[in-house]
Image (tube, rainbow, N blue to C red):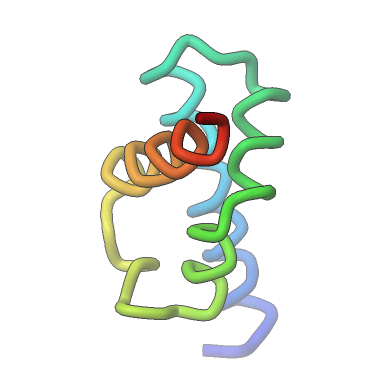
Length: 73
């Protein structure tokens, strides 16, 4: 698989995670996008640490939400 195709697949994964965040926690897409891209988990997914990129979008959204709430408190 070419690097361009891999990036397209990952970008689609990110979009699905953002939509899951938005739907699960009643956030606007803008807020969900901000939370996602400012999370450490997003960086770990990008780096393919612990095969996080293989996890479901809802699972990753819940991890990111927990991380977001920990940082806020």
